[in-house]
Image (cartoon, rainbow, N blue to C red; front, side, top):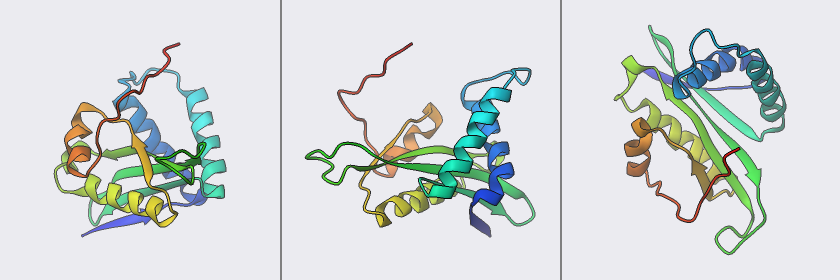
Length: 154
């Protein structure tokens, strides 16, 4: 049995531990990298956005194994447009499951729950960036590639 834990500001220490693990994994940061400034910025982010409801996070725990995964969704507004009349958007992020627990539907459960949180708030424009490992999962869940997107490299 696994439990989905909806986090609050009192869970910031646990979220920070997960966030730093995700950053080290996704960005291939060596363990020796000085991440003090990055940690402060992420802690500040969690403190502000969990408190005001513009970020929703969850942790999955398995009885006997402890916490095995985490995920989050950022809620924000953009200018309304024909494909998003209310301008409300969400950015799905930080979906991560420890390697030995992958393939059990944990990430899918988190994504469904987080997307449900966005939909319950009237948000139907939901974005994400993915690693190669997550691409298949998101495709199976209905996410598709966006055309005409570019990113400024600085």
